[in-house]
Length: 211
Image (cartoon, rainbow, N blue to C red; front, side, top):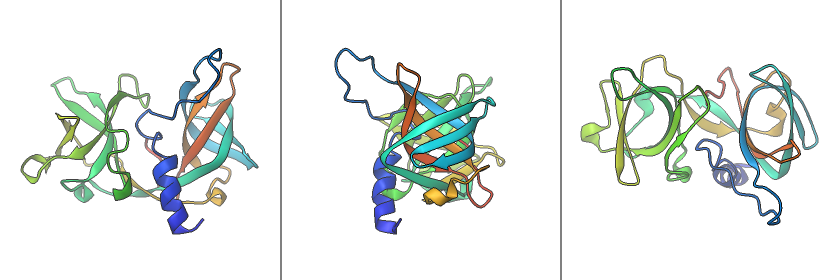
């Protein structure tokens, strides 16, 4: 996959991967809407458009990949890489003393800025939230381990510990979906139980998807 095609497919294909919004299916009126699901686990095998994954719960899951599906990897980053104006996705949990504490941080590539902006329920851990937002101005952005982000006219402060996983997205190919590779797959589950997806995020070079 060349870089130009990768950038285009990454922007379109991963738009719903990190903010709990995948595209609604254009099904007939009598068919119920597909259920949004997220599969986290390790690759068992990839055969054609069939991706078999052992989920984090230990169960085998078969995912049918949609035509034109995209794959991206995660690359290691750090809190020091977060700058005012960056668009980030932060999974977090409420803290007992108030505010939120980050579980992980994704720094979006510039071409994906604004994708899925907002704060949504997330299933990384019970009661977790995913916030996709822009890091606020230099006066109140990254300061003392706290990031202030803004979305839809609102602000949210999220503390980030030194050991919090921080990643960004990087190019990948279907060949990276080898047995044992760690993946995060946002998809849709039909009424018959089948799961489909148009995007896969895979671990590479020792970095695994923390989402």
